[in-house]
Image 1 (cartoon, rainbow, N blue to C red):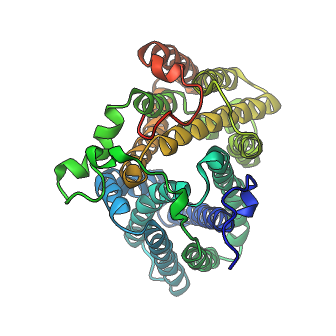
Image 2: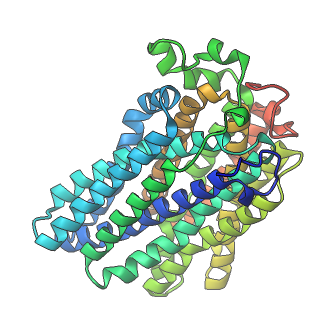
Length: 423
């Protein structure tokens, strides 16, 4: 095997990153495919919209319950093996869904139990994949690698649901069997990823911040929270994303807009759902080639402001074309914020702490998405979809202004990497 070209600035020259990108694309794509099939099948079984909400809840609950433990395990054991095991866990869940569908013994309760298994594997997988990345590419190209990794997620969001819908025509068992094979392939590819010790970010202060070499205790379990709390730049970036998405998210409102405001059919819902991913994919592909070289803090706040403005435009739109464009900008702005936040976390956190910090970040981002949809739906039920979207967009802009004052250190960030690890 040829040596890793540690000095190369081309992401494709780094074989382990290419494998990592494929794993993330395959895994997320299959997870999206499975989600489409589960949604259709469980609704066909029960005809109860509440069960669709339960599917989302049982997938998100493990992330809340296990975030602290997940982070500790990531800093104690080989993250590649954990990621590979997560793929096998999801493969087992998909296989059970396939067998239950083909043999006719799958019930609503069994589906929720299996989805909980998949959600538990996902709770380990998300922070693991974030924590692996700094160990397989040089720090000089890490921001571009983060953007390229995000493009894998957006590619899966665009392609996965569509492919899942097409395969569902042959029955849900076909979708689940396909997902099983994809998850197994992703697990195998992950075993081929190689960490480059010379490229791993290290820091002398790791032990003082609860490094993985210390014995397990409450202090080490909660070290990720403590590390973030003591660093205003990281605290500001993570909490900014939390409250922006919590207030400004409009995903839950898309069915209402498609049917009642745009007066269109289910095709419109599919188009609207794909719009943010199209904007995000375009942006992350650009950022994968052209890294943010300076004024990162100002760019992040500008992106949050654009996110809020796009939400306001979407709220008032009665045109399919304008709605698509607004949601594309919405997704693009969010992706810029995501890339900067992930870069700040991964470049300013010691490698031995990164698992716990990544787990905390995953907890916050997962909570913001789920609670944001609940916020949007609740306000829409009380006031209507348009007021809900308007309140969300205005709230995102207000959060941006408050955070600019509350976290001046974040606003003044120039380079994504600090002068020293842990800064």
